[in-house]
Length: 213
Ligand SMILES: O=C[C@H](O)COP(=O)(O)O
Ligand SMILES: CC(=O)C(=O)O
Image (cartoon, rainbow, N blue to C red; front, side):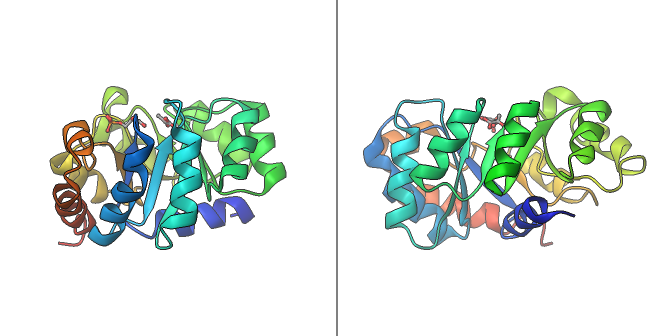
């Protein structure tokens, strides 16, 4: 495993669940991150799908010391640069392109690119990227597909994301090639909008226990 994959492996091992956050209101960034960290989920992926994504990463990285905040939906190399400037500790993209892989490798930042087929996984392995996001997990065959990848692609370890909930997360985490899972169920929009941080902390606490039974 090369440097950036090693570093991504360490981040993925910190918690069984990576909350994938789509924030509409910057004011929610810090209390939401504090609730997740208090509940036991320090690794947080803030997507760049909304205008406040980068500012949220900036604020969380400076104000929530226990958080390891990364940028998600990084679809272009310039977004990777902006994310690092904002304070992102890791980078996630739904797929991968040569320019994204090059940008991540040049910046030596932990990088979790998406892959959904054996060919995409092999292409990333050729770049030294052994830790990959299986996306979109449920739509790409879910647990059954990952079981099929385990033997021929034994070197690849996954963070499946997309359509996973608290119940199905257990099934994914039981697989030998799954290190953690990603999902938005820990930060439901209704609770974020209402500022129900205690509810989010409860969801995080339950998610942090997954895979440990
Ligand atoms: O990164 C992918 C999604 O935003 C998270 O998936 P989900 O909302 O289905 O959990
Ligand atoms: C889906 C995904 O991987 C992302 O938004 O980064």
